[in-house]
Length: 610
Image 1 (cartoon, rainbow, N blue to C red):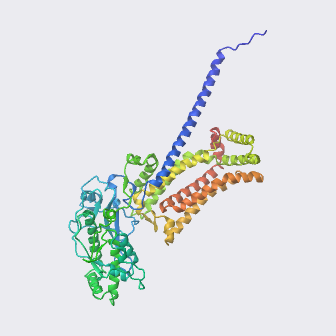
Image 2 (image 1 turned 120 degrees about the vertical axis):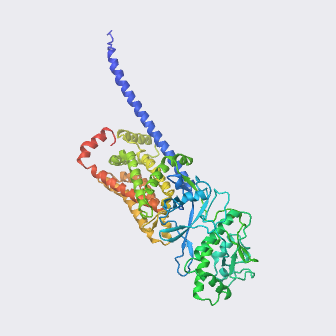
């Protein structure tokens, strides 16, 4: 019997050492893979939460309303309403002005006694640290394109401003007698909108006025309404008195502003009212008709929002309306959505990790850029600079995560074709479990051999989706973007809605967005098509088309999203799309260079990235 040969134990030292190194490396790879999966899972969870919150957390295109991001508490801006002189020459008066005019109160350099307007507003309500409460209302008048006047009362010289943070409101204007068109006037004009507003305000029994069975299209109103003009009743009820007082101040200050206009000054309005009443609206002068028509249109836009809509037929007055308790307890021209300003990172956590980790940092960058220069002086260009800054930062972050995928695109296309061959081979064995098992194993071996994860394309979406949603929500919550008017476009407006309203100026940005998004999807495919030319049969080609079908659907969805979002996000998509196109071209030609072939490509292969 042969003696068993024994190996010296000294050799075990080297074997164990090599084994321990291999085990350590395997453990490291396992931990790294686990952390990677954990990271993407967390990102997916946060992104999903962000998608859901996007449907719940309300935003608005009005400053001082809903969720907003500010650099500091001193910059928090209340809701404000701007009036201006009517642009209709046939109906002079005043009307509401759009806020998309590159004017922002927090950026206004106008000061009174070395104090900013926002600080004075806080002093007026008696709280220097106030964020103006959930609901508030401030009145402004636009005298010309770049001049805005903060309306004040002639009794106390204080701003016409009321906030839910206040306990009460005191009268600020000297109330004078105001005559405004009565229901009879609007009946003669067959103004259905006026009577519908009266009905909604629960002002009169609905059977007191209607347009049915009336050949002359006039409203059937009570015969007791026999005058064309009623007075405003300044005797306010004790219930909801603060709200009523503020509304009466608004009416007075706007009336004072209206009669100061050239068309109404020097008693022109009073004389026109007297002539119209005396002649019962017949055979009046064209000038009187023009004045009264413009005055009626102006008043109609005011009395219902301020709730002076209750008709007192006996006393022939418009009274404060307490019939609708919910409306009576609203501040006139207040924000519809409660104000929710975010100033610090800790405050952003109230909305969860998505807003604190993604939305808030992006908003901070935007507000830092926009506050560095005057919005009106730059005519909106500062907001474009802010968008450009965000594009650069987000694309660099995205590129760092997608680096391996971008440079390994050729390899992915090759694998898609190889997988198409495998899929075609098992196409006729879909009901055979054994063959399907072989099919799955062969695909798994293909991926393992080439160090490719089938979830790699999905990981790209996990990176880009939260960034896109975060940018979208940040842009909606930046006050300066809500008022920016750039090259005739309201950045807070939804382009396709404006287009349907007949504003064709929004058509070019929609077309450019679609073209850029389409080119962003097509150009990389064209560049990679020549690199991955292979001879495949018809069945393999059909299988390959099924694989890329999902990609085409996603491309169409992205183009669709580019149409339905607001103009500011469309500008972000255009700049971002141009970046992606330039990136695809840059990578394509860099991969053809000598530096890439001799240095970068070998290094990536050693890292098993391509």
